[in-house]
Length: 573
Ligand code: PEP
Ligand code: MG
View 1 (cartoon, protein in one colour):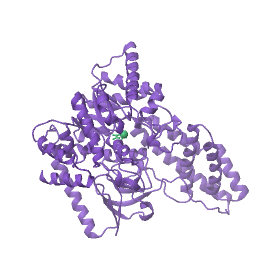
View 2 (cartoon, helix red, strand yellow):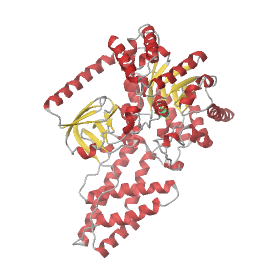
View 3 (spheres, protein in one colour):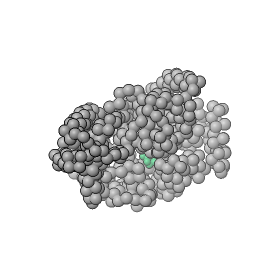
View 4 (spheres, helix red, strand yellow):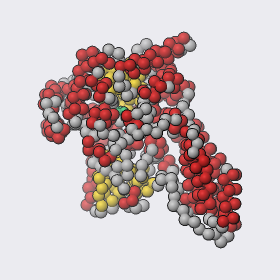
């Protein structure tokens, strides 16, 4: 039995057999002389045929799950697979140099890849990875290796990968992926956030787990604790099975809170909202009885495609969400791209510090047409149901005022086009940057609500890259400096009668929630899976005792001391 520690990314107990998902695009291919050209060409044709079948299968599944536009990516892959120029070059090399098809394919495709990679156009550069993707599939068939697409997984497995992109996570089949482990990544990477939304247990940043784990190894882990056991002893396995059962009965206990208001022990109501990134997340939102959408991360709609979605395309998606919410409010967070979320088609130059770089509102204010088309699409949904709009990454007053003026322009345009827009759309901003927290009394005069994005506020306050597992111990939600900033915002909100919300991961932290009750938060927004545990926790808290706790904690200077005090309090309730 071996144990490894990683970063808890999504809670839950996972027990299953390892499936190594090799998404590294480079395969090792040795030069091999061939005996018969004809036999080898047959092998090549067979490998291409198998690949084509697989790609068409992925196309169909993508069509069902994600729609026609995403499915078309795979039409282009089939065309590439059958490209006459590539095939004829491969065959001539095989016959002239008597080399194997996998070797010839490697040389020929590498040439094309080099050509595309050298192009200035970001879109054309991306075509290089399509070529790698398609022909690596063929090469794997030639080498007798498994080709796998996450959407096609049917067996129940624990997925082990170097890293996973948000779209890979989104296309996972949750009935078969019982959990996943990755070498790299942090708690607030977007794969981790998606895993929590999809309720798939996950541990990330487990160093070189892909080198350690072997296919079919038995793996057990607790996503909450971040500890991974490979081929555990019977004793550990039994413990995990028991814990899984306990978790199930805990779930039954939590289900009693479905349909109830979120009230403290002294009957103070607080709204527990859900964070979503796509329409499908509303399944978990509904199952867990979230009261509204406190954060809709709209950028996922812009990712994994080849160009910006048009206003109409955006409207189609946004309106489905507002419709399905059936009267519950949806807070749209405007495009928050940059950082770990890239959009190749925007041609953003390489940056040394993307989280401190060209990101979110900075990109939108620099691309007003893009920004305005999103705002127009969002505003149009207000006819269907209650909505709010908030701007991410605001770092100074000018940015907020400029964003609001683009919003007014969009609003006026729509009105002059005769479109109906609701009057009472709430306008807010995210507080994710220390300068905004410190200036919140000024901002409060210009917004209806604040939503504290603690994932970023923690990284910017503690100067810790949220994706860097080496320094994850410094990414500290209990850092007293961070708590002071949050308290400053809470005071500015209550003095100016601005609604106060939080939508980062701290919002569901069972040790911190009492502090947020004491600070007077009106709304806590979280991955839907945390809604019921938080509602249950709040039902045990009384505002006065939370206030006493807050005044104790705010005098403390070390997070260790704070954690100790918060744990002591938790044991008493
Ligand atoms: C945050 O920063 O806390 C937040 C909610 O935004 P995101 O995690 O999408 O950056
Ligand atoms: Mg953020």
